[in-house]
Length: 179
Image (cartoon, rainbow, N blue to C red; front, side):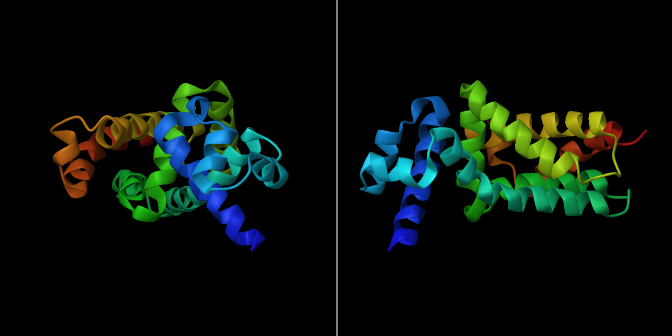
């Protein structure tokens, strides 16, 4: 029963953060969506920061996918990175979490710091194939493309297939990745 309540709270938090961002979501609104008392949310997660960090667990699959793409040969690296990152935005199991991350990190310095720590601790620390500043530039490019495609839904980018997007952006990403 407790695990069911925690799961309901996490799902409600993901929904709230995806719709309203970190700043626009409250413990009360999350509790109401999960149909629990706000005190129970605080009991399980202690703070809104800790609750937000807990919702990012699904983002670890994205980090693992990007890390795996970095481990392959240099040939095709840009395409693998683009496909791993943008593919996660299209996957039902991770898209809501990524939308939550984007809206929250853009609306709250606290959320941005939590996301930054996760990226630096989980991705940058474990990869050695690409210089960190280059990987950061590629990440910024991919985040901008994802924001335009999946958050703002700007056309024609939003209507392109994933393959069309990857083929189009790969040369620019390759130029950033290669010394």
